[in-house]
Amino acid sequence: MNCQLVKRLFWVLNLHYEHAISHIQEEDGIIGSIIGDALLAVFGTVPSEANKTVHAVRAGYFIQEVAGRLREQMYKKREEIIQQRGALTETEEGVYRAILLEVGVGIDGGSVFYGNIGSSRRMTNTVIGDNVNSASRLEGLTRVYKVPMVVSEYAKDELVGNSDEYRVVELDQVFVKGKTEGKRVYWPVQATQIDDDFSKDIDAFSKGLQYYYEGQWTRALSWFEKCTLPLAEEFRSRTSDGPKPRNWNGIWTMTTK
Image (cartoon, rainbow, N blue to C red):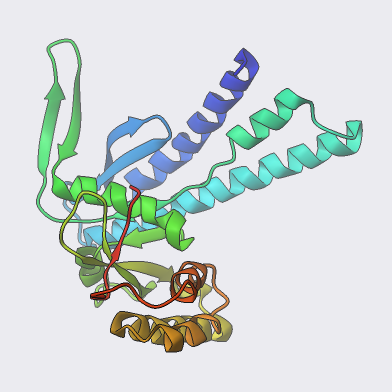
């Protein structure tokens, strides 16, 4: 990777973080750590009248909007260069691919340890605990289900009844990597994004998911095929590959983080 590519990459990441961190702080969140292109945000440490999970989900969608606008700007710039010169150079194409921001958000909650960690030379304020690791695993699942955000049952319970901004859709029951207990995971969908067609897709997916849990994979597949949302692709793949696994209990084992 040449110097020009590195400069562009860090410029875009810093621009993204400038807006993302601002939105997190506006929602009463604090920054626990920044590790490369990953960011840990913590909600609930600042007293607020609003539910901490509502704040977290709202901030997560703001971050998605920020990344989306940056991708749109980069795409327009790429098209301008192609119209002027016919094509991008190999380096420019490398820059474009490297700085496309695909953001996934994972949210979990519960008891964690919050404080300073480090040495006499450098300290940082952060959180550690099982729920922190879980949030990271949930973020990884956004790429499996092709949804922008995945939350735990803890977060789902805090959302339902505390906000009408979201419709919470159950996605799956999974063994995430490193865990021995199956957990249900959810997608909080922005209510403003839901129209009649979207509702029909969600209803079809939910019916398919119930048959899937019960081990009726042929019936499940028929419903997943009626769902046009990208999240159904994963389940069409699972249920069309053959009969359900032996001793099926409705819980899928994830092999990646």
